[in-house]
Every structure is written in structure tokens, then in C-alpha cells.
Figure 1 (cartoon, rainbow, N blue to C red):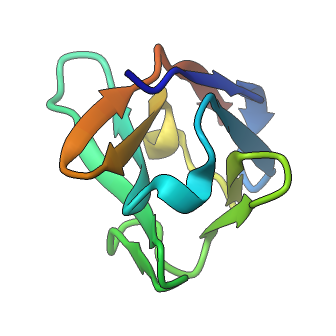
Figure 2: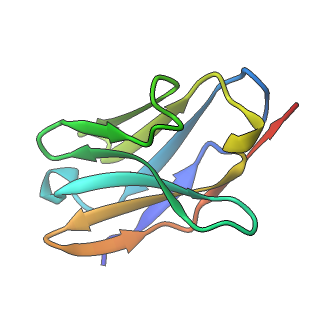
Length: 115
């Protein structure tokens, strides 16, 4: 089981920025893909961004052009840079990884955007 620990959440103003981190207990070269999801109160968990072992990235339409997913192979960490934040970005952000078809989730970090 891969362990994931998210950090970097907090309170931001509309139009502000935050960078989330997800520390992975495994060598990220062993992972097929790494993802960020989010879940707002009373809503279903939704996909935010993905980065695959090839380096290809994918984003939800709602964050495209504002959020950037990246990874640091040496630190076994995946990041989510969030710019131009909106109130609707308020949610718990969770990291997920895929290793050989087995998925692991982190506990999440709260992001609150105030207007």
C-alpha cells in the first residue's frame, strides 16, 4: 500500500494562489499515474488533474489554464499549483496514485477561497 500525505492547503483570497504537495512513500517511477481530486461539501468527488508516467498531463475543464500538476522525481512528490483561485475551488483536495492498477488515496488537505 502506497502512503500519501498532502499539504499546502489553507485560506486564500479570490485571485490568489496556493501550491499543494503530495508526498509519496513509493518511488514515483513505479507509478502509472498520479492524480489530484477534490470534494466540496455536499458534492461528489471530482477529478482535477493527472500526470502520467509519460509526463502527459490532463485537467478538468474547470481548472484548465489556472492549475498546473507537476512532479519532482527526486523528492517523490507531486504538486498542484493553483492560480487565479475562485470561491468554487473551495474543497478538500486529495491525492491519488495508480501503481500497477492498484489505487491509493491520501487523507486530503482543505482549500478555502474567500471572496
